[in-house]
Amino acid sequence: MYKSFRDMPVWIKAHDLAVDVFNMTVDLPRAEDYGLTSQIRRSANSSPANIAEGFGRKTSKDKSHFYIVARGSAYETQNHLLYGNRVKYFSDDDTKRFFDEYANLIFELNKIMKSFD
Image 1 (cartoon, rainbow, N blue to C red):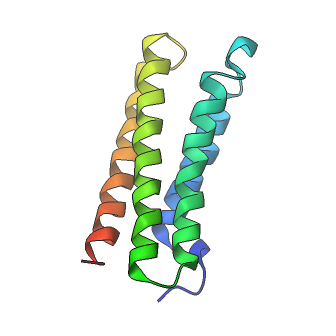
Image 2: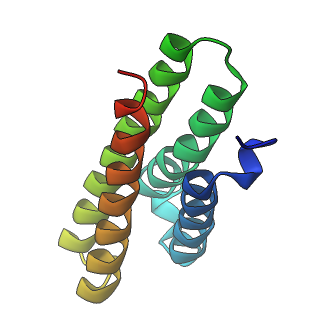
């Protein structure tokens, strides 16, 4: 059993992805500050935040709820990546790499949630 959410490989992966997404969006146009930049950063950071909150909950039902929300935020981030690629803000290579990393995160969250069944 982990002593802290910071020890959880799924949180580490989600946190690293959130930092990578932040860095990828630094050079987006200023016009996107309240659009795509804000949205993708918030959804990317929501995944590790909800994993951490789930870790701190007592019941399996409570924990599962926050992992479900974290998974939803990962899907939302995938959507923002596809949009950013389509409007030519993100390269095909970056989009594929991040999309695949988020797919892996979703897979890991699904395994955790299945353990609560």
